Amino acid sequence: MKIFTRWLIVISAVFLHYPAMATVTEYTLVIDREPVNITGKIVERITVNGSIPGPIMEFTEGDEAIIHVVNNLDEPTSVHWHGLLLPPEMDGVPGLGGYEAIKAGETFTYRFPRRQNDNYWHHAHSALQEQNGHYGALMIYFKDEPVVQADRDYVVLLSDFSNETMMAHPIHLHGMFVQLENGQPGEKLPNKHTVNVAPGTEYSVLLTADEPGEWAFHCHLLYHMSAGMMSTVVVAEYDEDDLPTAQPAPHDMGGHHDHH
Image (cartoon, rainbow, N blue to C red):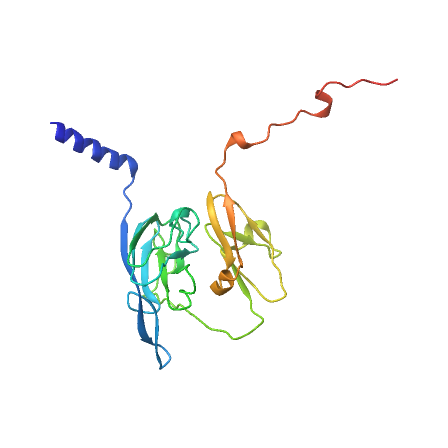
């Protein structure tokens, strides 16, 4: 009877923690360094599950994602889920939000709910591993049927190289979207997680700081980030005790005397 009671308590706790059981979608990504031939010449690059880019990962909005990342490199690695809204410790930036890099020979498991739908990508946030092949696409389908039906979806993921000296800076904020001010009314401002700033230009964006945590804010050319084009945006938990006490109006403060 005691054993049965213990199991009943455990099962009850599980159901209380997950009021509605989400569908779990699980992947394993193996990060390795292998010879590849993309341009007709064999070179050694970083692969995800043996390919560049990595395999397409597919989810449905509301899924619980479980992603095991196996690091077969001889150096630390990481995976950042670009554009996704998730807990800071799952964002994949070493040293931020309580997340540490995945050490050589170790495995780390990411687990978080899919709170949105659209096409996104993932990539390393360690050294120049992204440029060496550590990236891939992920798709999050609508929870309900999409408005436009198609026989098949094709995912196109582009990667390019540039020798230009005057370079644009794709400025990327983790964890939250910003609204790009472009002269349109507030309700029509586009949501952006990356704003491409061309040479000699500047942009203004609006941010609603509604995701508590420590978030990276940087140029997405990761060699620029490594050179110092990176900062952090810290969003504190809202606490009414931290709000300043309202000050009484001057005429209510006393000590006022009329002069005649």
